[in-house]
Every structure is written in structure tokens, then in C-alpha cells.
Image 1: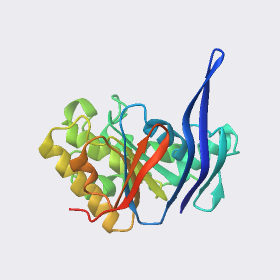
Image 2: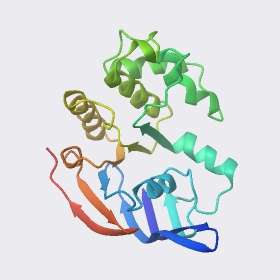
Image 3: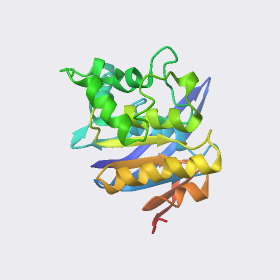
Length: 227
């Protein structure tokens, strides 16, 4: 499903070079639920950006769902992001002027074929996430937990190979965070592959495998029995 081989990422800052990722080897199977942890500056965000085709590695190979993506151009990367990846962010990234229904359907606008039944599919996904009675509410009319459910439904609209969740509970209270993790767990049980970045150990406990980064390298890569 996802192979990283000797992935390195460096940034030039004036005359100096900052090595953020220092040779990451990682394999994630279809239908795994993986949590990525590590202290600030460990390379978590950079790794997530590369996994999400938002950034390219300086060196190494990244094969996503059978396709080498480390050498693609911007347009090709955009297609991969739209067709194969679903994103869930800490800050939800919903459009305030759109209803929940239109927010969820939005990625279909950028799919190559489009879908005539995009709004019907969005309604089904929102119902599945427990928001069947909130279809026409805007983000300002929804709680944080409801906004994150909208974001999860949006991530699913194009049937992605992988969901990338970046601190999906970071802006939520403890009870709401557990509700969101129960939803992600259910999606995983239904066959969805999920890679999640979190700094919260109790949230990482929901994953099958926990990967810990430190100083741009994998410090720990351990199978885990989730809650």
C-alpha cells in the first residue's frame, strides 16, 4: 500500500542545510491503522506532508498504492492527492460559507470524472458519521466535534486508498475526541487504511501500530493492540 525507502528531506537556510528526515524506511499495509508520534521538531509534520504528496522528498523512494510519487510534477501530485488520499486536519479546514453537505461534496469538483450524485453521496457519508440532521448547517452552526465529522466525511468522498489524519483530536475536548476516535476505529474496521499523527499517547492507543520519530529518524516501530 505505502512504501518509503530511505526518504530524506533537507531544507536550505541561507548557507546552512537542515536535515529534517534522515533516511526513513516505512511500509504500511492496506487496512492498517498507524499512529505517528514524536516530540516537536522530530519530523512528524514533514513526514506527513510527504505522505500526503504536499511536499517532495530530497532523496529516496515513495510508492503509494503501486505508484512511485517522489518524482511527480505538481499537477500529477494534485491528482494523486485528490484521487487516492483523504485528509483530516486539526483545524478542520472547512469553508465557512458552505453547508456541511457542500463541504463534503467539494473534492468531487476536482475529480477528473466528477460525480453526478456527489451531493447524494455526501449526504450518505454525513449520515454515516452521525450528521444526517445537520446537512445544511454551516461550520459556524456546528460544534468542534461535528466539524471534525464533516471533515472525515469529506475525506471519504473520493474513496481514498489512505486517510491521513493530522492531530484529528487536537482541538477537541476529551469526550468529543473519544467520539472521533470511535468513528475512525469504525472506518478502520470497515477496511479503511489510516495514518494518524498525534502527540497524545491515549489517542495513539487506538492504532494497531505506533511509530515514534526522533531527530528525523524512526526511534520505535511497534505493533500495538488497540483499545
